[in-house]
Length: 108
Image (tube, rainbow, N blue to C red; front, side, top):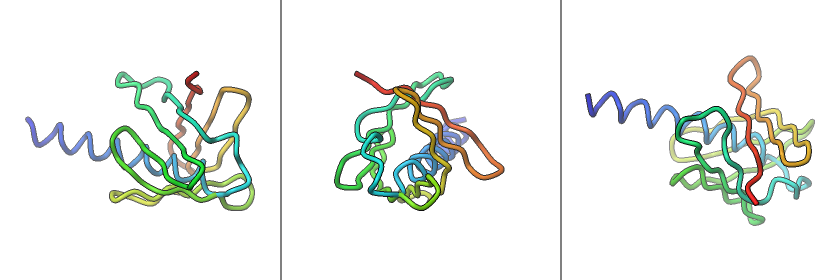
């Protein structure tokens, strides 16, 4: 049972890190800087984007870079993921092409 829980946690962290990478893929998006709480998750994981390109997904450290067409690339020790990013006020959506959709609310 502990092995299954560890695998699920690792999988979740990989997905979260990938989403974060897509959001932060470029330097021209200062609106991403700060802490974001993931919506719809029982654990309410916090993602924190720093000005220097560092990202913290829960307790996993990584890097992010912005790409063209509002894409963000998030790299962690577990995975590299590219997301389509959309920010509207205090709401952030990271969408993998043909894949998962992560929604966040800015923490104040």
